[in-house]
Amino acid sequence: MFPLLLATALLIAAAPCAAEAPLPEPLPGPLPEYLADTGYGRLEMLPFSPQYPLWTDGAVKRRWLHLPAGRFIDASRPDAWEFPPGTRLWKEFGFAGRPVETRYIERLPDGRWRYASYLWEVDGRSARLAPERGVVLAVEGAPGGRYAVPGRLDCTACHEGAPVPVLGAGALQLSPDRDPLAPHAVPARPGDADLATLSARGWLRGLPAALLASPPRIAAQSPAERAAFGYLHANCGHCHNDHGAPVSLVLAQSAADPAGSAARVRAALLVGPDRWRPADAGPDVRLVVPGQPSASLLLARMRSRDPLRQMPPLGTRAADAEGIAAVTSWINHPLLMRKEPQP
Image 1 (cartoon, rainbow, N blue to C red):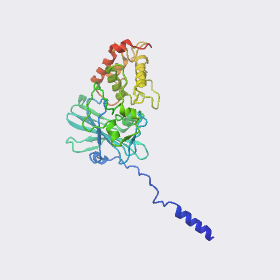
Image 2: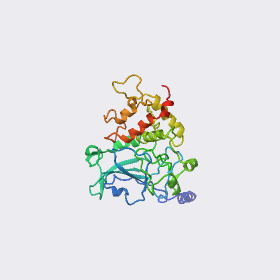
Image 3: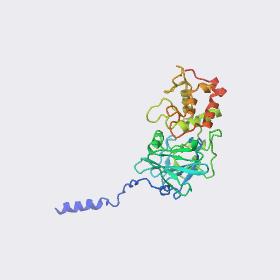
Image 4: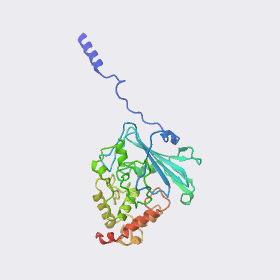
């Protein structure tokens, strides 16, 4: 009996105490009521500016990224960065010189993401959690004086259609090789993060050395094509990509395979039909007809604000004149007309 008790005691002594085992991180509680309680203005927030901004009715935007201490982004898959739990991002939308809304996304300890919007007081001193279903505000400077704040499910419709829910912070968007013709291009501000600065501070690891030595850019046959493809990548690629459910048109570009992805986008736009077509369209309606912007269905959908026709379908009340001009310039480019693929 005593040997059995002794063996049992030894096993208990050798086993780690429950207090010594790592405890799982507790899930956060409800979303904070105030923006300041998300860590905004208190945590280390690294600003960044994607080279191809998403059009949101002319709003002026600022963006920030925070990573927990000792954590980093795994960029070994250049087109699908892995952000660590505890990642937080903020994006501010402003009109007429004042902030109106700040959107917030956070990666939880279990790997899920959550989304929220915060509405700024007119005096700019604080911002409070927006209603879960969204709200429409009267805002000076917004189209028609109205600005729609998305609901949380609206956020998932765009963010979770992409390979990574973080939009605007990836190898192509943060490449130091910025496109001078990008619609709504905002020059990188001093202190803005890019691939080199993120890598230097240890926030980005695993990015192939070739992409640091020669920063990625969209492969294109002309500067006009580069700007048009970059615009479509940023404004459409989060839904029109080869991640998840199949789509008829892939517009997302690849940092790992720039030439291949650009060729696929070019061929799809010039050859492939669209699932949607106007009632009066003929049998040969096409997304892009080189040299004929008025016959190109892509531009018709970009111009439309009919909820059943417009693209992108969410987040805008006004068509983007600068984006339309960039795509029109590509459609009219002589090089495109000389190399038109045959349907």
